[in-house]
Amino acid sequence: MTTPELSPPSLTRHGALACWQAFLPKVREYSARRNYVETGHGNVSRLSAALRHRLITEDEVIRDSLVHFGFAAAEKWLQEVCWRRYWKGWLEVRSQVWTNWRQRVRELRATLPQEVLEKADAAAAGDSGVACMDVIARELIETGYLHNHARMWWASFWIHAEGLPWELGADFFFRHLLDADPASNTLSWRWVAGLQTPGKTYLVRLSNLEKYAHAGLLRDRRGSDRVADGAVTPSLQPDHADTSKRPLPEFPTSLPALAGRTGLWLHADDLAPEIGPLAEFAPAAVAAFTSERTYREDYRLGENRIRALHTVLADGIARAAAHYRCPATLTDADDTPVSIGAWSRSQQLTEVVAFAPTVGPVRDIVPRLSSHLAEHGIRLTLIRCTSDAHAFRLASGGFFPFWEKMSRHLRSGPAV
Image (cartoon, rainbow, N blue to C red; front, side, top):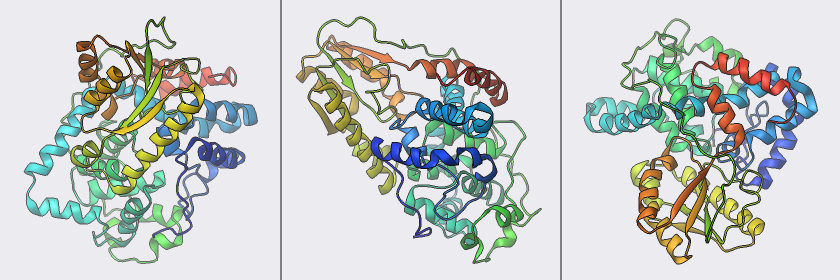
């Protein structure tokens, strides 16, 4: 393994809370140390997979940080935590950017010349000939994790040094990162490519690696001249996406009056129902669904990523069963909307409640799921947490206007 000191990320709520409490004392030093890519990655929390699936929530992390350090001492850390919500909010009003990216991945795989696809596959396999970049690619495949600085280096290498389409690089990350978030991943790659902030590219420089990377990353210097300072120039790629804003989808932030027999559909976008707006819900049954067919055929996910999805969903279902004291099942589904419908009918439900998924694979199935349930007289009710609704309303423009408003909110106290 590339980094033998690297332990697996926490993929249960219990483990994530323990990981967070261990990292919390480092929040004060986070700003000074966060860019250093060390073996073991002790300078960062490595909570990204847990936060992505809401095993632990941004609200919990923000609240603890404010209580222990106050806003000023924790500002850089809080800003990084809030980037996740900013990206999600930005994509909520531009879901077509996600849809276009998925279409482009399929188109490029079908139409690019064979030699370009082979070059892309070699780079993704850690066989580009630039040793430091190949170490990063192999670490991603083997561990499902990369430090954010390493993600930027490698994405820049792929786009600007190798001249490969950003969409396929983003797909490589999405297939292997255990924290793969539709918004953060897609929009961060667009930013490196100079599309998210038009004309502002991120260019990898060897001197930056020499300053911030652990010694092992640069032990083998083969091919380093290809990322030497000044050797990498912008490879401007066309933007195929429509980035115009649409209305923000609105969802209730608390449970409306429910009648009849109700169930909870638990999905991978939010796996802490016991502490959010559904904490007092009393479902008759709870269910979550994996989909090996979707994972392998539609998204071509790596084995580590698939195992992680099974793990986080199993943890969520176990906690939901204990919290709600009702039957809770985890089922593999060839067709998730059809399987949710079958479960709903078997439980004689009149309504299915779920957290509102953000733009991405889970949200993509909602229209068909809602129609399928309605055909059987079953209503689908989606709930959004108040803090998400607040952040998303602030996130339609650039990050710094968002942060100016969000920071005023956070300075008011530990409640979020």
